Image (cartoon, rainbow, N blue to C red):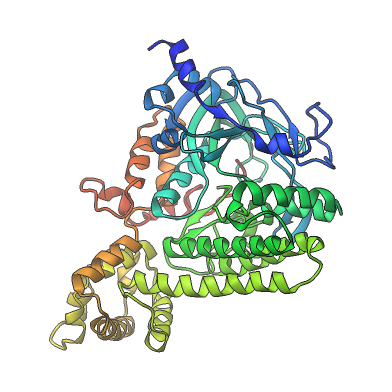
Amino acid sequence: MDSQTHASALDTLRFDNRFTRELPADPIDDNYCRQVTGACFSRVQPRSVIKPQLVAFAREVAAQLGLSEEACRSEAFAEVFVGNRLLDGMEPFAMCYGGHQFGNWAGQLGDGRAINLGEVLNAQGERYTLQLKGAGPTPYARQADGLAVLRSSVREFLCSEAMHHLGVPTTRALSLVLTGEQVSRDMFYDGHPKLEPGAVVCRVAPSFLRFGSFQILSARRDHTLLKQLLDYCIRTDFPELGEPSPEVYAAWFEEVCRRTAEMIVHWMRVGFVHGVMNTDNMSVLGLTIDYGPYGWLEDFDPDWTPNTTDAHQRRYRYGQQPQIAMWNLVQLANAIYPLLEHTEPFQRGLDAYADTYERANTRMLAHKLGLQDYQADSDDGLTTELLVILQLVETDMTLFYRCLAEVELAKATDSNISDTELMEPLMEAYYRPSELTDDYRQRLRGWLSQYAARAASDPLDDNARRQLMNRTNPKYVLRNYLAQLAIDQAEQGEFSMIEELLEVLRHPYDDQPGMEKYAEKRPDWARTKPGCSMLSCSS
């Protein structure tokens, strides 16, 4: 198949750019940094690059869009999804929004280096926005270059897809393309910039509307446009709620609260730490969005954050993510308050967040232990004690829960079974086995005994319990050191580890014989290696 045929295959993408058709545009066409008022977006062209090279693509995302794998491997595909060529129907734009950053109002932010190519309708009538990250500056770039480097782009591409296959609500990633150019970045903002390979990720989602999309309009008291944007959002992304009205606005906020709660429970389940839960990084669709200095909880520490910018305050640490989500929802409520002008509907929404989170979280905690239902009388103490035990010594969260399914609970109450024999299935979860004191072993054994008694009273038998645990607790997650190893190889022109990781992460709950190396706990060398522990927002 020649390049022209491949181009024709891409031209089958059917664009229906409702966002730009129904909402007001920035009247200024020139691309320079400025405050954009009275508009939801600015039209902007991606920056051309010298030598696009496809690194990887997600075949499942391509299939959703109606693209064949052969078309995705074509030269035309790389040209389009690096920003060098526009297909018929593409109308590139950058969105205007604001937000609270680390708890402080930051004013206008916007798509500083994200350029939406347009909205595609697939064969099933589903709407997807295609967005390039790193394709050049926009009016919202705040004096930055609008580019992205391979390092952060690999992390975004892999994590978007890893989260989807884990069952976490998320934006997706279609492709990762090298630009053939070098980009200067100071990785830790310490005065030591260096040149890094440039790259562009194509992100895909039904919508990229954020809490901050509404906040900026409310902060500017542009209530007419605020209403127009919310009406558009409801009609496009929440049509099941009905035609926009004050009652539907309240129902919309309540639905956003519920979806946000469910997303956060999934984060907590798999040990994901977003790292930058600013309100401009919160999707109104309840999708995980903007993969920057995120991290995966390895040793169980509720106070851990992967973001160097947050190292002192630890605002966005793992254990505080549910509370931060609530705080962010309060800011969204404040933004759309002018459309209702009474608090009761918003309180209902926030109550729905709390109720949804509580129910989903307790169900999740029960399922992590292989219990069919959560029984507060017994399980509150059981789960609380386990979370304390996990912090007493350095314990890998992912491996502990996965290994727990292999513990023979009948042995937990047998005094003839030694602590060593009972704990043997759990040993690979400990980073420093020498720190397992007698007191720790006794405390863990006491917990295992309580757990065994609770499991015995549950309707599920041992085999069903293990199956439920292994459907809830992944074996494979995108550990920071694995992503960094893939980055190190990619920067040398070797992309095979990216492809292999992507394939492994497609099946995170399966054993996958031969791939066990990707399920191992963080090695000692990765404790302090840049990119393997904490990360900065530099990308």
